[in-house]
Length: 603
Image 1 (cartoon, rainbow, N blue to C red):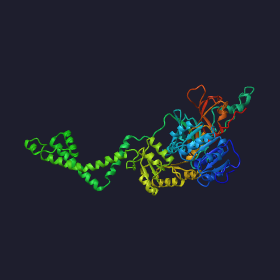
Image 2 (cartoon, rainbow, N blue to C red):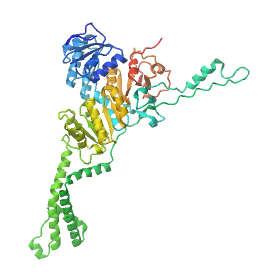
Image 3 (cartoon, rainbow, N blue to C red):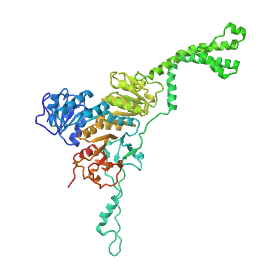
Image 4 (cartoon, helix red, strand yellow):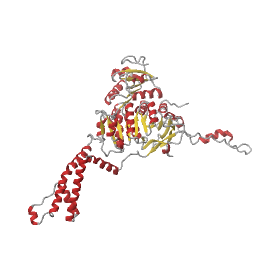
């Protein structure tokens, strides 16, 4: 049922429900997570039931009510029965508005679980300390690693106690993999992929033999040996595979100093683009070299010649006086004086150019100052859109040592100042994409990441980039799965990601009290890396790996038992039962992690 009229409460009283405040894409995905995978009643509070994703949310089966209020006020919280709710998710609005709403909700219901979106993660950590049962998450921070890694053509990673977990595909899978996470991978049809398929354990052959021979064993009465039935031939592998692997260090993308020096020299050449300027400077340089040769010929002292030539270039030469010439203490005769005059005049020509170069270099090096991409900007990543996600992606790529150029049409976008503070050049303007991409030096870029809030704009940027540079890798932010499937079929060397699809599982798990360390992308699918601690009274007590792992659902990848010590990766004892104080790390699908909230020990 849905509420009727503006700001009216649900028709029937409701309790033990979850409240989602927001009508954006993240709210839409989060509601889907809660109703489909966690099977809990959800009440949605939106600012306008006719805008954004609110109409689609209202049509979802399992949504108990949709209530419309312009902002999350005290009255709005009472309308959605905040006093009897189990959890509250604030996924829209500014940081300040979400903080105010979270504190108000806690006043109404001190025991409610509150998960709120915060762009300023440091501030979010401080607010968490003020809440009895709260968690601050950033959707952009959760999704940004996937976009940055996709731009570099490698999977993103999640750090767990000094190990960086990542997804490897096909030939990149090594023998020390943790587990297989996907098979039947077809990049032209991502729907065929199986996430966390059933694994063939080491004891499978022994179980088969035992069931085949029964209690009699392989030897018949009279000494005749029973021949086992040959096992059926394995089915041929269909499609590619993906596995979870661990790295000791996070791989970086540093650029060696020789390439940077070469790019800097190329960048300096922009001061000599005029043909007349080049002719004047080359003539002056030839005159200086000729005068230098005259000085060296007359004095036969290379060091002194360099010294006097540099002083002359800088305009610091000491002219001969008539008394010096009469006494024979001058600099060395008529031709030497001519050479010094030539060098001094040419120095006047070089001085303005050198000054302009120095001012440009020093000015562009100041943090926060506008800087356009220069001729030395090469092998870089172009980030289109400087909203929350674009800012995070540009920052992460910069921290990895990758050159970045940003594009933004809105000169008031909040991310412009943030990336300029890092010295990242920004192309601002609402002109055609072709012109803006040319200014961003598309021809020399390695990848383009389009992460604006509009699917059509992102697709336009990607197609325009591919037209201007057929070799460039494109990564596009897309919400619609069908749209993304057509994108994969049409373009090669391309990837698409959905911010809400990556972030919503983490928000849903946090709302249920689970700690999600991060999300890993397997094409358009999401794998969650979560930590679970077995508390007193938890329904996880008494379960073993056989109980927890389910095909297509959960894999236990590490465990730490109550006696302490480091995490034990790929703990081999599948029959050991969990006890209070134990901690496990799991790789799970969204539905698999949801089942861990309702799993119970079977008597």
